[in-house]
Picture 1 (spheres, rainbow, N blue to C red):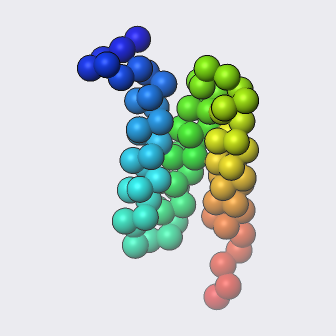
Picture 2: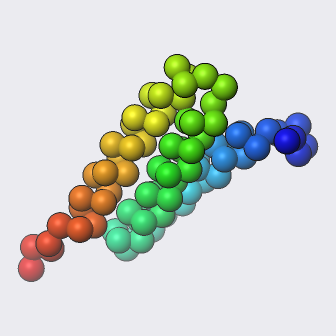
Picture 3: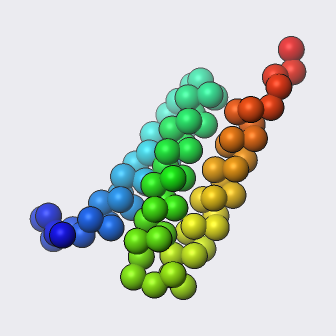
Length: 80
């Protein structure tokens, strides 16, 4: 599927990039992590949508690691 000469896979990649960029505008750390996690999930999907797993695997691994870190920091008890 192409729209304006851009494939569906590319749209997923652009949306993922936008979500990660948007996460850095957040002042609330919890919101930052949640939006960044959505970006990571989109990047993981983008990695699986790549024509070759050899190309997508580094994207998948890096974003999975970031996703795990975000989950860890969201779930750990706060220091109050």
